[in-house]
Each structure stands twice: as structure tokens, then as C-alpha cells.
Length: 239
Length: 180
Image 1 (cartoon, chains in turn cyan, purple):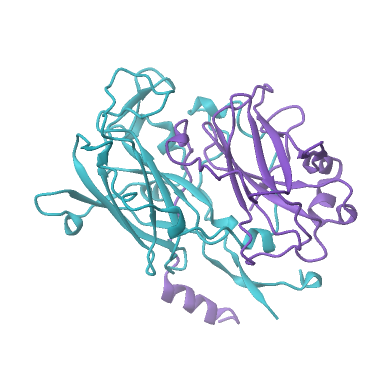
Image 2 (cartoon, chains in turn yellow, orange):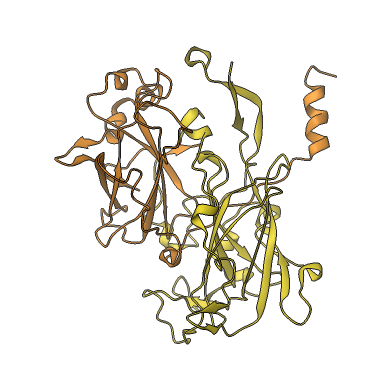
């Protein structure tokens, strides 16, 4: 008999509610009807396995683009991809994107008066190793204004897209920097109900990862849903 | 003491870690997430699976990302079949994948595709499914039957090139979404 583990639920308060008045764009973009529980069956317990075939040499270094070096504070971001049981998630594709040192994205929608950096594109890809570790080098992103509320500024952040090993584990999130003075007024950061869960979005300064005369180190571990105690048996009459 | 003692000890030994919260994909996803071959679950043949993503006013969502995950035509995973597609929405909210109609994964569930939708204004992804018309198992599929009259909103319509299903985040004709 084949058994596949189900994934344990996230603790209440981990994820933001879809209807969150403080973030205005949610108003017309959240389902108004309650979500139905989708039983975890084979389609939910499996997932795409992308790895090194999606990553090119240099994708882990965002500090060099179009023949030159990006301006700003060079940083190394590293951490482990784990599940909530503490198991490493190996061979998982992480895709990251971010604003430049001045808080400007290389994107047609971003037109605020902060300069583009001709040598910063703001995109990276890495794959976790057998121990779930990842590491990339980039420029510390700047904060930027947005129109959500008067004098609204997003705290500096790096976007992460994470596949994990199953459809159920798919996660898109944002990594923040410690002690950002803009947290208090940011509805996206504060949409996470549980304050302890919110803090898990904040990287830690890591002097051990700081490279002498080169780059400051920050650590950001990412935890995906782990296995439930009750295994799932694949016989159709067994559910 | 209960029969669950062993499990509890194991849990303490490994240490249950809190999971990382979701955050919105935001408006700038096209900096890295679109892949040239993203919409191609298969590289040739197959069918075109199209749809349109709209908001609570019925307006197109031009800055979304739709991802799909499915079994192969025989209902299998892990056979080398990619099974995954990713498509950013166009200015009209449209998305299009080249894929095959999956087989039933277990003989019980009707052929289906799992769907994740991400966009600015969604603080977490929403998950839904796409089913196909004229599948005998649709009548007894546990998810479709649980949806009752709303089941029809998850069943794609036949088109000349394949199938089409609109995804509406909110309001009239709102798509049924699932918690996983």
C-alpha cells in the first residue's frame, strides 16, 4: 500500500485574511464567499519539481547587470528552506525580485521619481541544496512610496516565490529587514494576524554570513507546511 | 497518558516550527516570474486552455499570475510529464495554457487541474480547480458534488482550440475557491 503524508494546517493567524481593509487593493480582489475545504488528494500532495534546469550561472548574483555593478549596500541573503517538522526541503526553486537601492523597480508600472540603476535588474533564482540551504548576493533594496494611504511607504523587502515539494506547499512571501521604522504603517506586513508569525517575515542580521570587506549578511529561513500525523492512503475507497 | 503519547514525544523531539506567512505577489511579478515556456505544459499538440481573470466589478485583472498543476493524460504524476504551467495575465485579464486533458488520478475523482491565482490585492493565493465537460466522473466527483449548483462554475466550456473557464475573484459568478 502506498501512503503519502498529508500536510498539516498552518496555525491560525499565520496567513493574512484575504479581506483586509487596510490594504485597499484587496477590496475588489478577495472572494466574498467562504472557502470550501479541498481534501488533500494526489493532485494536492504532489507538485512540480523544478531545480537546476531553471537556474543559469549568475542567477544568484543580482549585483551585476548589463556589464556593470549595481549601486548600493551589497548584501548576502541566505537561509534554510524547511518544513514545519524541521525537515530540510532540498532541490527547491526560489525566485526573488526586488527594488533597487533607491526603492525603484525595473518595471513599467513603477514611475516614481527615484532613478533606475542601469546595472540592477532585481531578479534572481536559486535552488536549495540537499540541506535546504540557499544563498544569493544582492543590493539592499530601498523603501518606496505607494498610494495606499497618505504618505504610505513600503518597508524595504525582497519578494520570494517558493515551490516546495507539493502544490499544497506553494508559497509567495516577502522578506523584510530588522528594525525597519516603516513597519508601523505598512498594511501588507501588518496583515499577518499573529505577531509572532509576522516576525518570521523579518530577516536577521547575521555577522557570521557577513563577508569581510565585501557584503553584509542577512539570514532568512522559510518554513513550509510539514506532514500531518495521519498518512493518506491512495486507495480510492480508503478516504 | 493516551495512545497519542508517542506522537507527541516525536513532535517535541523534532520541534514544530511555525510556518512562514504569505504576502501579496504585488504588481512587479513580471520582473522574474514569467518564463518563456511557462504556459506550455506540453510543447506541442494538446489543447489550448484559456480563461479570463476578473475582479469584483467584473473588470479584468491585468497583473495576475495563474499557475496550474495536473496529472498526465493517464492520470499519473512523476512520469516525466511536466504537469505545471504558469501564465501571467494579459491586459484583458486573459491567460492561456497549452496542455492535455488529464486522466482521473484515482478512478474516483473526475479529471481536474489544480489552479493557484496570485495578484496584487491578494494577500495569499486563492486555489480553485478546472474540470472538463462530458466527463462521466463529473457526476460523482466528491468536490463537484459538494459544490452543488456551484459546480458548473468549475467546468470549462469546449472551444474550437480546447477549453475555456473564467475565474472571477468576487461578485456575480464568483468562482468557488478552496482552502487547502
